[in-house]
Length: 485
Image 1 (cartoon, rainbow, N blue to C red):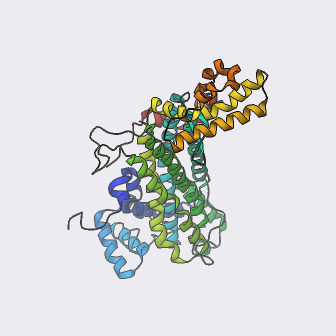
Image 2 (image 1 turned 180 degrees about the vertical axis):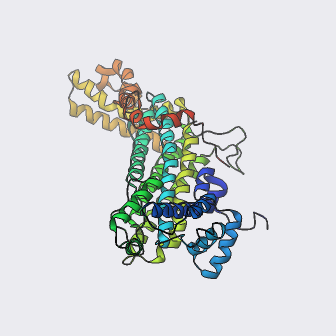
Image 3 (image 1 turned 45 degrees about the vertical axis):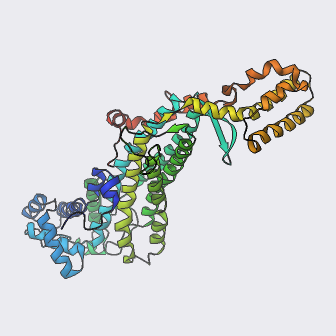
């Protein structure tokens, strides 16, 4: 059968990185199961459980990676037993026969499924965090490079005041810093399920350890040490609480909303021809309109972000719909949503890294737009200058109001250019400030503390550099992320 005959998720074929796809691949997941069974057997032997031989541990250690042949054995057994965990217990026992009697001793299925999920999500966050740091670095450098380019700021999608290109990018950086903090927090606070038994009471382990709770505590201490977690959750049921998944999803999927916000800004600015994402020499923007340079990468990121930001409701519903100590309706949806959440975030960061590494700014186009609106924005300064020279503030305001409406009519109804300044210069009332008007039209006078804010936030020793310090090595050696297609 051709590889093109069956559906494959585009996250695999088009968007996500090899390392993230491999992490959530079947071989990785089921090999983690084997690793967990091996750790459990080691820990049980270490705390004094008899019947686990050195030969059994040696055979398990030799077959921790699930082979294609192992998968074939497990597939046959799962079809017979309708239970994936027991199918893989059987397949592991086939290659480690000395261990077959003791694999999964005292455990329930969630010992491998849930603990593996926690390991995979932890490792996925470890892949995402440096990539996010690199994107923040890119945008912070862009902000510093463009900190002093005045541009129109918009409220209600209407020109309001002037900001700088870099100051707008500084807002993008701050939002991404929030995502970094949120994901770091989930990564730091993530704990292990450990060996808890069927309903979280450790009753099965109390049986095999003859009521010695101290040995069970030691068992979990060893398991956490081997798996790389500080401790287990204090309370679990058959599963770790699905609230954990929801908390992680809120952090990871929040990146989707930030990505949409940033790329929507870029798409609007591209429409204004003020800023463009990188456009390759042979890239085609439209199959019909050969002249177009569409922001296709930003559109892709926006689309992936929309999908990612929609996922927390699934995790919320799964948590809310669990009955008592566990119902299995959490299984199928999490098999889909946890990997896709991480692959989506990964794909978004690849796209953002690519776009943020090569943004192109067109200052002359920006200046042209500034000058279309600046006359209106300069009127407050003109009024203040008139008052400083002895004029009446209210009278000056009324004169400006009338002239502004006249200029607005020229722009909106006649299709002409904004001639407000010419009208002011032709109005006798404003003679005292005629010589000052041109100097009042310098766009840099209207950007407030934009430059200072960017330097303080993104510059040397600022909050951004401090936050990115742990990722400096990765940022230094990482090149520009390349898109698959």
